[in-house]
Length: 149
Image (cartoon, rainbow, N blue to C red; front, side, top):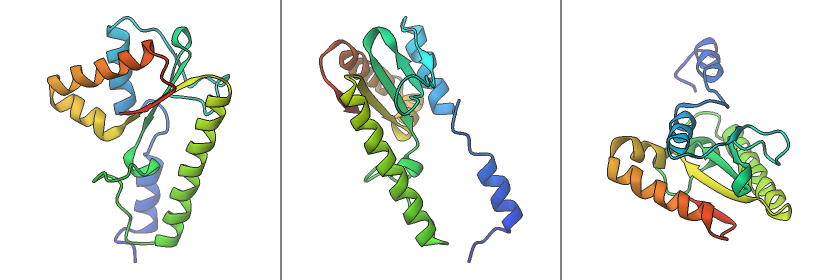
């Protein structure tokens, strides 16, 4: 049994955005400040990545740990109500992510996934922010095809 009324639950779910989330905006600002230029939600790239760096042929996805099931993460918990619905929903999300990753690989586009919990660490601690941005920059300039941070 859900602890919220259907109206409250609907209001909460409607407030969840798929574009321009706080973690996404934070990461975009960091990239821009370091001189990277990008396009947003490019429809020409499989999966419509949150950020696409054409110069580096790289798609960047800022994944929410809950929705995309970041393994071992505290934010990727399973709701206690409607468990079958959520299992089906999460499985479909993960499968779609894998399909998009394969499409990007087939087209020769590099893929960087930045998890929501990583962005939260970056916001809390400047040293973590610098370390993760160095990892991302190294990825952009090397011939690596896929990276999750």
